[in-house]
Length: 470
Image (tube, rainbow, N blue to C red; front, side, top):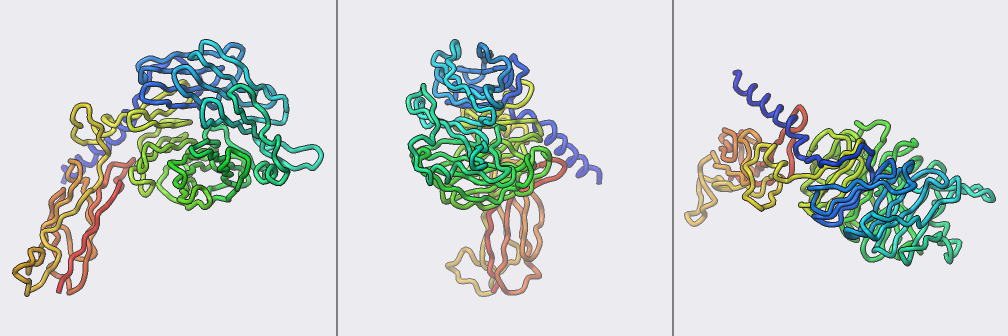
């Protein structure tokens, strides 16, 4: 009677001690709070934060340059957009002159101040770029003195040097369609990803506060549409904090209430039509300030109380750890980074993810995926006393041999659900006993239950097969 309890305790210990090892902390000599993150490729990554701090690695994280922008020691750089080892924009937040945009073209040795805000009511939140010469920046809504209407403030550069209000040259109707904000609506400068620019001249702006909406333009900001979302809102600390698009159609938004980091209701939604409609989803384990696609199926979200990963396009999620993160970004499986308070920079290790969760190590120089069920094989799928001799899938036996195909995992991680009968044994190979079942159609579903906090949770895809009893 003591052995199962001991095994469970060992698995729980494994889950709790391994969580932090999945993210590999980088050796960075700074205590700045980091929120800006730009992953260029597997070797080049930039980050930014408080104290006028900018970080850069050009060797996949083995060494990091810690840069203090001259004259910016009191500034908080909440967003950074980089293009190679030499070129990057940084945006600082704050009212009035605290909101600025700098650019470097020599790897951070020199910085050019390109924009300094002169409107005391404006507070810039984020910057996004289509390429190194075409970028956009957004400020929280500002109320005008004449009409007492609040409008988002948008800047744009067309040459990589000069920043001008995007409203110039636009018709009033087009300008008001995006710039008019609801009372109490704002953008969040939590991770630099409330504003993103994507391929085909698209740009997305996500909001929160009194309402949670997504603004969308297909022509770099000349024309806009805006749509409500089901993300939680209604307080100054709630709404959408981050948006990511995999392509022109598929995207994800995350958020919640940063004042209540453990709440996760209505904090995740997906679009399949380019942002016109958003459908709620579940699976996150708290407020999330950043989200990124690794590939079409792999999504990672981070926040104050930890990080979550999905390997099936958001259908199911697994909590990675409980570290405090602000932002996350990826350029493929070999370049996944997150940043947070107190100089925290981490890189996700797939080898570490597998090894610390009880999986066999991957072959050298290979990238492995976290496991899920890929196939479910039954010795036969029809039970009858008069099976045709040519039908190998028919038998008069009431016990079916079941084999689950998945990456090798501990036997007690396999999970079976049946609509009738019972499963005998455990692990990848079991017996489905249908001795007492009446004629009809019955199903068996196989999945993997993985340690999740203080319990187990089915993770990834499941496979269902059916058997007919005649």
